[in-house]
Length: 73
Image 1 (spheres, rainbow, N blue to C red):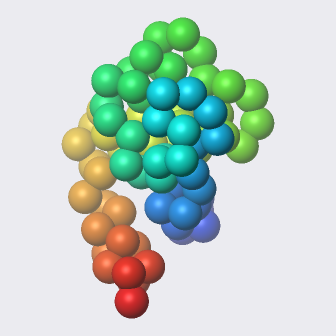
Image 2 (image 1 turned 180 degrees about the vertical axis):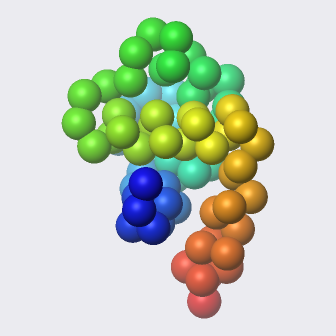
Image 3 (image 1 turned 90 degrees about the vertical axis):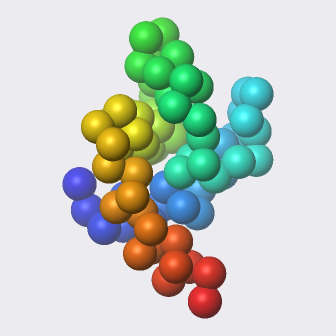
């Protein structure tokens, strides 16, 4: 995992589905869990969703807080 991947979680928006337009980092855990059960989509969006699922599932979402603060400036 690279820092650039973490930054993308805060800048990449969900391109489809129920949460279309929401940042990947802001997707609810139950939605990420659904993808984990059904399968992540191919490509970069799938990799980002899988990364966010891992962070959320393991209680590591707070790792994004410094990046959120940096992006809000």
